[in-house]
Image 1: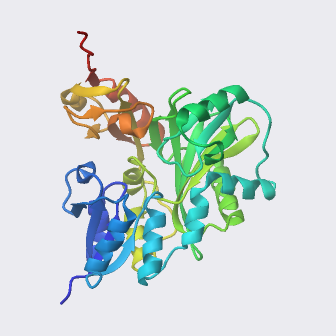
Image 2: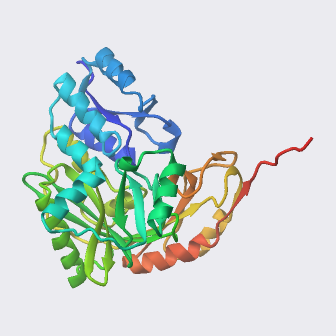
Image 3: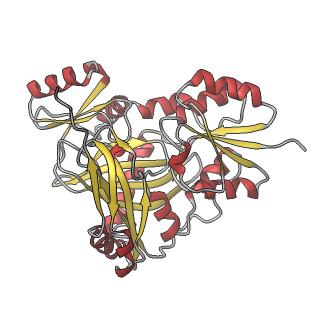
Length: 387
């Protein structure tokens, strides 16, 4: 019997869960990855491949077409590429390539919301400049004046029309983790997101499900689904970042993808939903899940530790002290000793995540923050030799 491969172009986390879901339906998951080590220890098949080269991807599909049953991606970067490949080779198209491209364009999304009266541009400062098709906090800048914004554009190497300029909102940051397709609306919950100070916007602490079953959560849920209905979002998994201001909730951006970092493992651990299986089921044209009503099974939080300078990771200390903290704290490395740090202020400078659990997300957050203080990282900077 010929092999039935479910081909994933990159992933987000926990590929074993997706492999198990594929296997349950008689398919073998294969993940093509630019950096196979990114996915850590896994039983799934992860193949090193130049995933940013679309010509190479097309050639790979052509060479293995008989064995490949479907192509998908739970990321926004490769989601568009996977959809284009489905169109080109006649795979089951569960998405919409043009819609995926639309949701990758932050300026286009904001323009539609403005047209519907759901957003209103202002002439006040400060502002946030971000690449229209950016992700992972790459190409995000803080500007306090038009002059400073122009200087940022010059320094960035991009053109002005490659950026969207948004108001800088004052207030706490959150994200909504949901599923919406043409037939289902599934609310996983809200993630509390503590960010670094400007000019960087790295995510320091994430906790889920925040304020579960509260009136505040209900208001946030209704607001999120109202936006998704206005935009006719029906692509499945979606990660919506927003700020709560003195005037209510304000949209930061919509990402047509699975929740990043370790939030999806948090959804898996604290609710009765499995977003990994839902993504696989969507690709295989089976119902995403049998249960639509959420059950909360506890709280989850993780603290991200970042390098404060470029250089080489010289040491990571304190992991052996985690056992003395409550909440079963666990260290999940993103970098190892000897790895190079080439930039700061984005996810690429992340050394690792410290995750913990609790009865609620708030309790888990207290535990994760406390335990993270046990970890110290040293970065060795290069010295320039003077002759």
